Amino acid sequence: MRLSDTIFALASGAGRAAISLLRLSGPDSALVLTRLAGRLPRPRQASLRRLRHPETGELLDEALLLWFPAPRSYTGEDSAELHLHGGRAVLEGVSAALLACGARPAEPGEFTRRAFLNGRLDLTAAEGIADLIDAETAAQRRQALRQAGGALAARYAGWGERLTRLLAHQEASIEFAEDGIPNDLDDEVRQGAATLAAEIAAHLADGGRGERLREGLWAAIIGAPNAGKSSLLNALAGREAAIVSARAGTTRDVVEVRLDLGGVPVLLADTAGLRDTPDEIEAEGVRRARRRAEEADLVIALFAADAAPDAETLALLRPGTVVVANKVDLAAPPASIGGIAPIALSARDGTGLDALRSLLEREAQSRAGLSEEASLTRPRHRAALGEAVDWLEEAQRAPLPELAAESLRAALRSLGRLTGRVGVEQVLDVVFGDFCIGK
Ligand SMILES: Nc1nc2c(ncn2[C@@H]2O[C@H](COP(=O)(O)OP(=O)(O)OP(=O)(O)O)[C@@H](O)[C@H]2O)c(=O)[nH]1
Image (cartoon, rainbow, N blue to C red; front, top):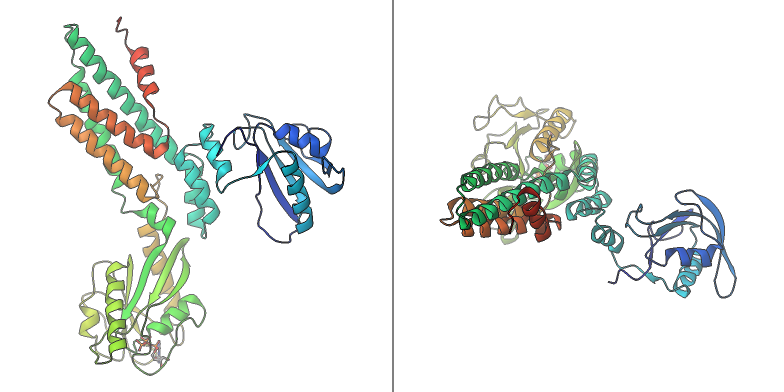
């Protein structure tokens, strides 16, 4: 990937469409656009132009052009958008003309990569843009927009700056000690490292909500055979995803549907009815059901109101499990199951379904909804921040100022990996800006 290349790519979806959007970016963009369209449009103003092949002069399309000179563009380079008619032949003709002008097809993510390299966004914002494109629910969109807008970037950059300052002070204390000047910078640094470590640790202790919202929550319905698990899954999904039958032991494997529960994407699994069975295939289904219940972020334990609660399902109840008494059209629900008041439901006639859905939405949002503060969204973030906390703690324990400085530098590198930003030059800037060391 060379920044000296001028690249282009279809930015809109592939296939026949009213309009196709081609993007162009790189140092030769002005030249390429001029050869195709005769002259450059005014910056950031839509202009209708005839596009011709630069060698044959053949008319390719009449298109709307947008010209974004550097640095005020998405990539930070000279770039342009070509709004073409969305036919295949148009796209092929214009692509061939761009190739003839020396531009090359972009690699996946190359526009955003260039934006990052040109300092237009940090790594977390770039990830936010990828998430925005993948967002399936409103809450995912909000989280991605916030991250793409730099909410995490700003927070991590703030921590990076504080860390840089701590490191600068630590370096200064070492210099002062050499010169025999008394100072209490060491204590200051230790105190600062402790405060910062606590702040980062609090950000990490968010129950993984940002990651869950990005990836989707895992939910599972468990219960005895014939309790109505498949009926409930179908009712929540609004379609016949799982087979419903009066025969106990119908569901053998895990059946999954995707739901949007209050903006949180949820992968809901119907599982095999929990019971001891000599049937080998069903027994494997029961094992999978138990595993699924263990792994799930949200468990719905379903009991039939017209039967005594079964011991297998009762044994899997945990704090936070949603307990449901189904078939209330046949019998009144018990007041309590395993010490929890159940939601009364009839998957057959729909009684209680809205109440259950609202409860599930609240539960999903409390586990993965948007919090007031921007949450981290990837294991990569968690790992880098965890490392930074470890190094900050190491710095507080360090027996020598030189070792404390080394640990702070390592913490800074961890944050730097997260944002792709913090470099040594910044430390030097602070060292020489804050202190007149005079050497
Ligand atoms: N009367 C009544 N019958 C129900 C209700 N929900 C489910 N059923 C019936 O109960 C039987 C079992 O329903 P399923 O949804 O297949 O139950 P399941 O828990 O998935 O069963 P397994 O796959 O064997 O574990 C079917 O005959 C359903 O029609 C309900 O609310 N009321």
